[in-house]
Image 1 (cartoon, rainbow, N blue to C red):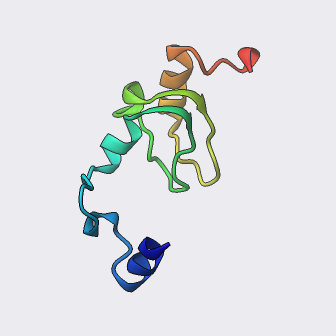
Image 2: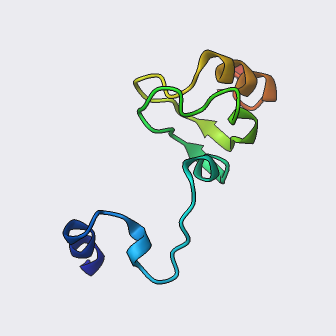
Length: 85
């Protein structure tokens, strides 16, 4: 796994590899996922970007990555209903 060595010797960014397209955190959260586990930082999914979240399973981890407002938006979108789980 040569790429692991390259990552450890650089700034640990994947953009050193050919064919890699750099995207923002906002773009990353808006991709289509089967399962999305947002980063363990507060307020990564907010009322500003919750409408863009597209996943079948949203598995929130620790440290509150989803704001209360985003929680409500995700519930209103459906597919996140606890009774369906």
